[in-house]
Amino acid sequence: MKLVKIIVCVVVAVLAVGCGTVRKGSKTVDQNAVDTTNVAKGNVMEGMVLTNPAEQLAGEWTFMSIDGKQVKTMSHAFVIFDFAENRFYGNNGCNVINGNFKCEGNMVAFNDIISTRMACDNETSEHTVMKALNDAVSLKLSEKEGIKYLQLLDKKDRELALLKGQNLAFMNGAWTVEEIDGESVEDKNVKLVIDLDQLTIHGNSGCNIVNGTVYIDYGKDWGVQFQQLLSTMKMCENIQTEKKLLVALELTETCKQLDNYKIALYDGKGECVAVLKRLHLEK
Image 1 (cartoon, rainbow, N blue to C red):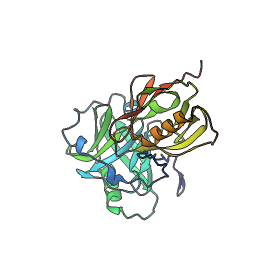
Image 2: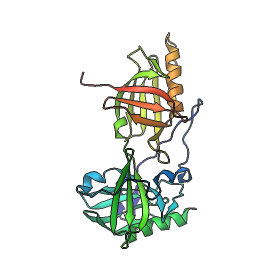
Image 3: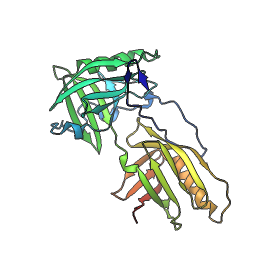
Image 4: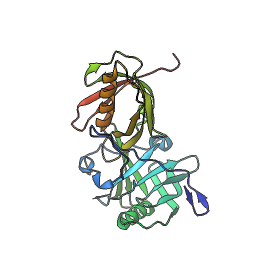
């Protein structure tokens, strides 16, 4: 995506969670779904000292609230820090933004901020995002239950904005399907490949080739959905395994890393619908 006279090297796609037994199409991201009740002030751990900001602030940070009010935008409001160039990139909930930043320890300064000029209905949130970046002088990094939170603070140490960082990189790679609905899958040809950079999922159901898209639900902790799932139409003896797999993927709303080799997929009720085991391609 291009800004005037500048190439912005970011567009982070948002991926959507499947929560039904009917195959779903893409949907508009609605920040209204974001719930900040679990990250209210005082509900996260004490701030950490930024001894290695480039590592500690890696990844994408979603704006959850500004001045204590929930961010409500139709586009995903976020920032990404590029410490190699001292640049940041992202979206203010309406327009693509980028600029320079300087970070020394917990102190920060954003400057030379520019954005595209598309008009949006959520103009108020867009302007509050920009103001929070302009007024920020320090950062406070906290963590709760594996989720990182970043506060932008003003010169009086008051919270300007609260951002959430979710790193689902552990989902990237090739997987065998070990369980579906608590039952072991004996067919080791049932495999999936998840690519969060391309927001795609594809693999073999043990009968047919399966393809689909991935959506990260920033309104939920570890929220992920699989959409637009399609398969070839060959008939096989173990077609029931394929049907169960597709339903499990469509029901998935959240995920969890069980260990370095396994991840679990959960439906909207928190029930485990599938367990995936990492496939070591070198073997």
